[in-house]
Image 1 (cartoon, rainbow, N blue to C red):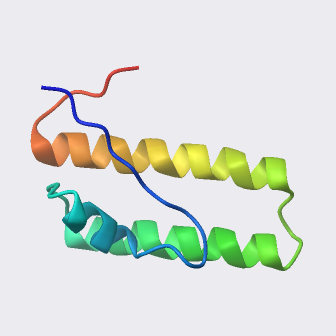
Image 2: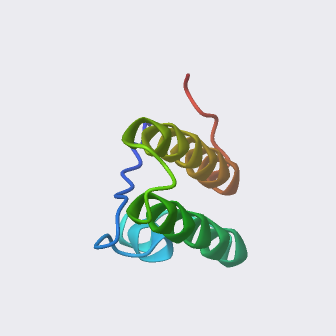
Length: 81
């Protein structure tokens, strides 16, 4: 069975933990808190003009891949590339 993980980014998005809970995915709470901290840091840097749009997109892609890898490990699944 394939699962698609949807994570919304941005200041108005639900927390990472809430998004994972809503999708009924397994995760480590401490890691989810760190992902949330990273998301908020990225948003802060973008709003302050320290990250360009393209840099922000690259960071989002990397963070998304880390979140997916984390959830896959907790779920006992492998990530398709």
